[in-house]
Length: 211
Image (cartoon, rainbow, N blue to C red; front, side, top):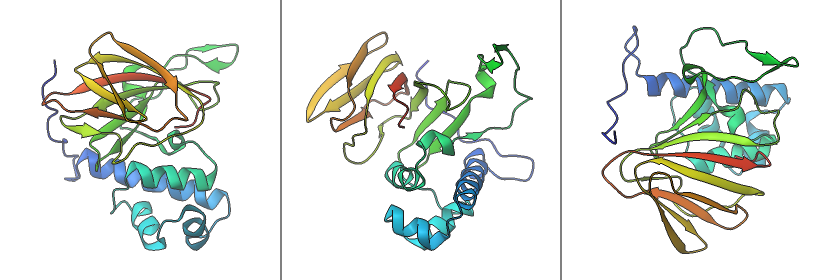
């Protein structure tokens, strides 16, 4: 418990899992952009992000920050979770109730690694068609969600599963250890940091879905 994560494993062709995730993220971004009929230039103008950076992200050769992902998602009018990708896995389970999938097995989660911040997000809900967004978030030692506090509409609730994190809301710090939880208006500028030398894990619920 709490040990540093191992280096990303290489695939059969020598690509690391981070590199593969970058390619998948880029493909997901490109698919959403083209489905909306937007050119790279148009998306760049909407998001306030350079066209060359978007092109590099789509080709999997640049790792965007969480701030850049927020801008791109907002410009596309989708939550960031719409950019989450599926890792290599077996076929998804099909447990349903009234025609809707209700179970997400551990190996089936869609996820997103943000290499710059060294934070990994996994979606715990089967899809984005829910009234709540449910996330598993892993923080590498001495990592944080983004360089400066950010805000988004809604309410956020989180429980610390492992390690210790510092949640800063409008400049005030709150320390969470295993089993501690927090609830706050996510419209207030906030940030989560792992200042320790060990991994930390949060489970977060956001309503309405906005991450």
